[in-house]
Image (cartoon, rainbow, N blue to C red; front, top):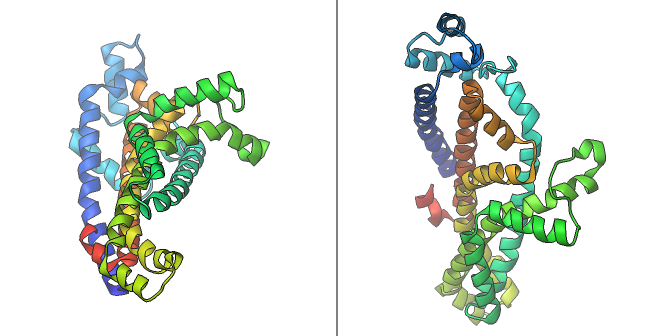
Length: 319
């Protein structure tokens, strides 16, 4: 099993390299096709000669693919260039905006995972019941409603009507403590977690139902194994493999959802930086954000697929 996992990991890493190259190359070409960063840096009142001088000083007068290959070589060494506006290192700029996004994403994913396991276990062992039908309706609604709309509803109910939580903003836990910081993150995390939780719950429920119909479960029951023993010793591990895979696939949804939720709740995270970079045509920042997001998604899919393979060897077809 360990050898199989290592082989799958090596194959996935090798496959990820051309994927990253294609994603970053397409993004680089598209960015330069929709705007001229030299004109943005030079300013609206700059003459064509001044724009040309800025373009030359930034190296933007060279062929696009030559610029991309230079960027790729530097990025491999951890150098993503300088912001066109702040003139600071792009990686350092991302590091300033990253903590709120990481904390929000971690809280949302933790809530989604715990809730999906509890609810999926409750309905998966007793399909067709009242609780199953009720949670099924909630899951469909949670998947259908966009997370930013959920955020507006939560603000209306819990901030404006009941005044239990702040309507927006962010507080650093190191400055105000975890209690106050979590008050500001409760509603954003809930709005981001709802859709993730519903997909995970439906996946875990369906997987549990399939496993409970297996011959090995009937054999265990005939031997007198308790319902709890059947669940924890036999069903849960096999049913977890598809659920874990879905979590990996949701990382992309988590990233894009976090960007929208941050805008709704005025959280100064990567979403804010992305919006500012796109509006200001700060191409080095946008390019770095795309590359890092692609890398995170590929890494998450790799890790979750390997975990699924360890949980259930029959899931090797997913990896």
